[in-house]
Length: 561
Ligand code: HEM
Image 1 (cartoon, rainbow, N blue to C red):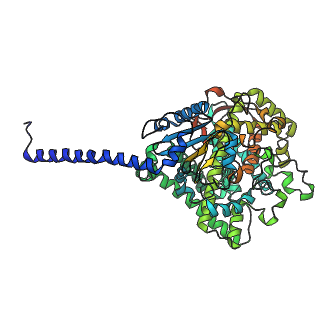
Image 2: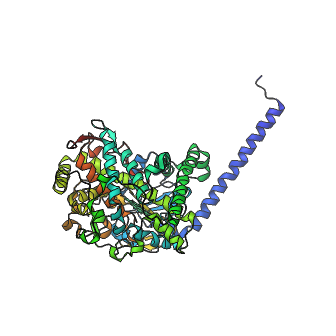
Image 3: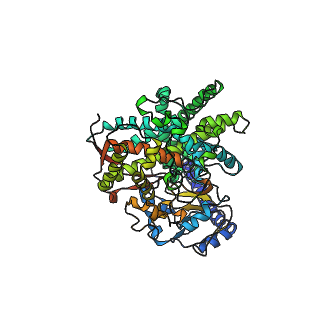
């Protein structure tokens, strides 16, 4: 019975010899590929060998450090940063160099040459196309020039009523959670998407009905899929990803997202033809500030509006730091309006490109701000004495009044602002910035040259926690941002919004929106946390998050009159 028939034996013999031939060819093929790879990358390998870094295995290099959960990867990479100021790692044939010295960071971020994004940003392409985040060269340059003025303070001040209306709506939703421990990120995320729909896109979330809600959910889920692709190695190749269930889910989500973007664009274009400009979102009467109805001449005198207050290190100038009065009247328009106006006035930008920029702003403006506000609230919960000072500041500014925050109020929120900047220091929503180098770059911190072709990773998280820059670097201390303490710090030692020509265009928008949202929440609640900061489980995907969820409890601060 055990004897095989002639046919079976034949099949079996054929299998064995085919397998043998396969291995016989595979091994030399790998060796040949390896030799070719080493010869063709001689220059890169030679320069890389002079850069310190953890020991790796032949062929796979340090690949094993990048396997495991996001929390594990984060821990492993962060541990290296204590051994090496600059670290070289190989993930198979891919060379990654991590920088954490602000002097080296400056070389890269201040440059107009090293602006190409690393290859991992391609995961965004099906969603964001060639939008500002991933584009490069002349397309990026001309679109950046078009978009940056739409984020100037003079434009943003016009959004303050919408910020207030949405912040108040968020507070009402949060009241339902009294007494429970819950994840505040869900609320921050929803509020952020809704505010972006009304401000940057200029549409009313109420008029979008179900499609607005579906859009917000789809944006959130797309972020989760992108996070997965960064951490699960097998989801990286496009063909494998497309075959996986995540590929199918992405297709459905993108359909929802792109349909709404197209719909919004269509209705905005029609409104444009009829001469309607600006956001069509409605603001309830109680959220309208006196500033927005006061004539220009009566508006409060402006304080320092650039610099630290709007998120940049003191003294750094980029294209967002031009004097806002220099932004001509014509340019004082919301993001989408300006793009449409530009395309009508002969600026070469197609409808598809406008759609890609809208999608980009919705992505970049959403997850980052949601993470920042969630970390802020958790930190308030874990530092009651700091929270008490924030409450005191709110009482000084607003007294017992329930009135909406004005732009002038946001300039008075100096302590809240320091708390926010300190939250961005300890928990930068974008924990790393990656670039592809197209030419060799000499560093300043040591005698090292980064080879062309490598992926350069700026470890923002570590830069912000260097003991030589921030005494007690792991302690949440908002006074790190007292003017006298920040004055002498290196420009590039605080880079939550990146810096230089490719810095975040939404920086001022984010700071203003966060101040209105967080001050409204702090005026209404006491935030409590049962989990001490030392037990936060950090998960560094594209956006830094708490792997254990942003768990807080809320108590009413005062009964609403
Ligand atoms: C706390 C909130 C935010 C943080 C921490 C943040 C951080 C950053 C960082 C670090 C970059 C550089 C990324 C890189 O080079 O890979 C960036 C770029 C960008 N951000 Fe933000 N961002 C925030 C909010 C926003 C908002 C609200 C918007 C828009 C409404 C926005 C729009 C953009 C865009 C379009 C870019 C690409 C700029 C370019 O490459 O020219 N961001 N952001």
